[in-house]
Image (cartoon, rainbow, N blue to C red; front, side):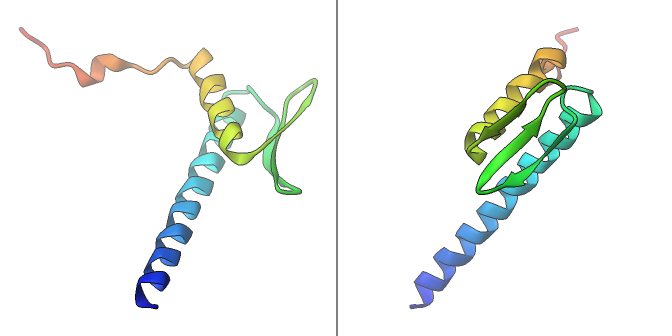
Length: 85
């Protein structure tokens, strides 16, 4: 029983982290002017664009927002490399 409670707590924590990341990406996309709004609606994640509404399962919405942001703000991999000078 104790193990079941711990597993449930881990699931809840992971879900919370996922929701926070999704919300953060949505806010970043808004700040960049890529979308006009975002949020949960009827078990889906709604992404409001200027000319359309995109409804996706949350895991697909996360990928969609990441890719949307990366189109205008590519990941800078140079931070991970050390200077050889």
